[in-house]
Image (cartoon, rainbow, N blue to C red; front, side):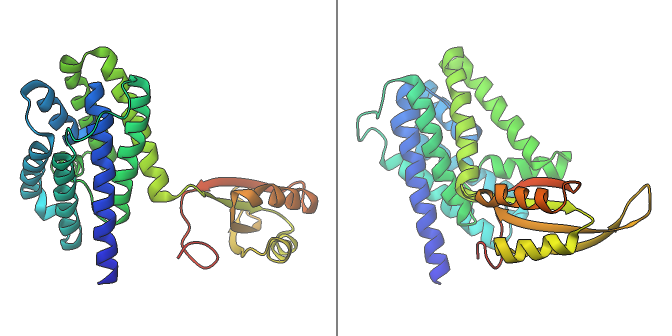
Length: 276
């Protein structure tokens, strides 16, 4: 129950931040957005329809069309996300003055607020509906990947909005959407990215002892062999914080200058010594 209450609070908070970004930065500066919210903004510019009500109607229709693609938990949180986003879009409309009338600042900070808001909704396990459901429908019936389907839908909506808001505002909108997407990644994955290191060396045991002893990090030994020589190889796999990377590289260099090292950036690590 506590987990559900926490998730509902996150959805509501995210929806409020999202609505502030739309109502006090995007709309006053004649910017648009991708996905369903982009459609609602354009209909507001063109027909004067309330973004909150339009967003709710379109997303409810999409949920009805795609409810079979959602598990029960996702469906409940998605409906809550749609409800709170639509509610706060409606309640916060025209209540305060715009935060800025500078189009560039509006594009940047609208992207940040929208990204933070959607990221908090995603953290709860929910979605804001819209493009997510459309992407799943395209994946099922057209074979498109989810990422490509969402990207194509966003681009179509933004380009279509250029006939209403003009080319210059459309370019600012692309800035907003890009910043929003990156912000969602940071909120969901965290700012403190880790590094996964693969080390192929003839001194695996010595390196493993130094990593566990000096860096106080665990290491996993994998067994492989050279594709050309067929010689057996021991491979070290280590996950560390990015601030520890230089120490590890120095340690490897001092122990085995001939070691082959591959460094990967990872966005989230779950397990002992990292996130729960």
